[in-house]
Length: 205
Image (cartoon, rainbow, N blue to C red; front, side):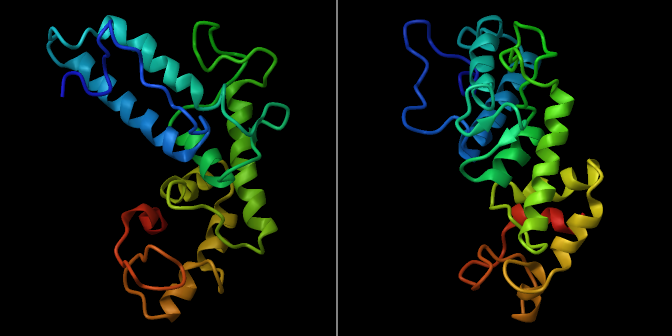
């Protein structure tokens, strides 16, 4: 695993993200995995194929794509406004991808003229809460963001809104699932084609 997501041969270009929007939850998940592999490379003995001194800047380049270059990022508002909004906002916090003007200019999350990182994080969390309230207290996240959203809401002072979303009747919602006989976490809200999915398990915490 020495070369997995930690280093690229000097003669090979770093693979392009192509048409994938840098702000997509999939890209955020990929970034998280790259960070984990990079961390592992730092604690393992050096190998000829894993030069961590040269891989850190390249991994950082991908980190910067999460919000600094993300499509749909609204700098004045401090959160995403397009795409899978709730998941993008949740993953930005969970995976430490939030941009800000108070970072070192050498940090690829640095964004001149933007709000500080903590202000942006608060704006992201508020956006999560506001979207739930606007949807009559119904859950608004998808499979990527649901793993983190409730914990983020609680951490930023929106525990009451998180609880309302968890206990709201109708679709989408956990109560509706229970009324349909669910004893596990289904993949979809409306049927039981696949009935055991950990990505919504944060509701238990």
